[in-house]
Length: 214
Ligand SMILES: C[S@@+](CC[C@H](N)C(=O)[O-])C[C@H]1O[C@@H](n2cnc3c(N)ncnc32)[C@H](O)[C@@H]1O
Image (cartoon, rainbow, N blue to C red; front, side):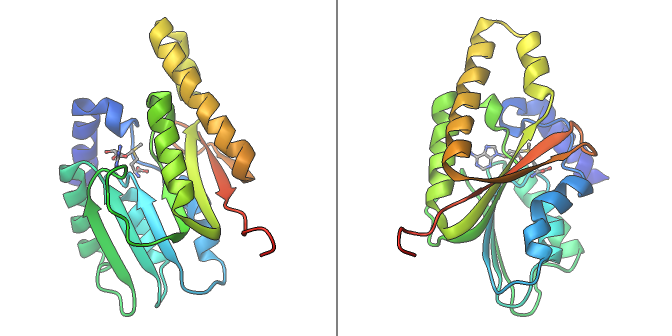
């Protein structure tokens, strides 16, 4: 419960960075993380914008020996909550599994790996187009060939926002949406709608192609 209260406090204090009214539901997590629950080999996974660790906990439960998980959260109080949540669940020290918790801005972090699977619950439609582009470019560049990037778009959120906002906000949202569309068209794999989340969300999966001839 404290975890949820901390999340809500950060929503109040940093709404434009947190960009959600409630942590992701278990149903949203199951959809986002479905590829990790399949039979598979060891993976290097990145989660960006981990909030209070709602999804991180589900993700850590799906890890297997040989997996490495990097978790990045910009907000230091939420980053601390993620550590507590994983420690309480006994998930930080699983044999053969490495979890690195990083309190940093994903855009300036110094990455030392490429990833098989990248999970983002960042509020992309709340960012200026240039920032949405920088994030999508960075994260798709960080994929290994054939690696998958998954992100969410809240279903009615930006429409409601556009309806009740001025021209400047509408322009910002439209700019971010057109950048997202560009990346969807370039890397599209598939999408799923999850109604059991607040607000309901669409989960999109983008795949980095193999180099030509691969
Ligand atoms: C919509 S919340 C999602 C939280 C959590 N993953 C969930 O699904 O409930 C987005 C999170 O991204 C974080 N965030 C925003 N900008 C970031 C950045 N540049 N680098 C790292 N984290 C960022 C926010 O602090 C917030 O915790």
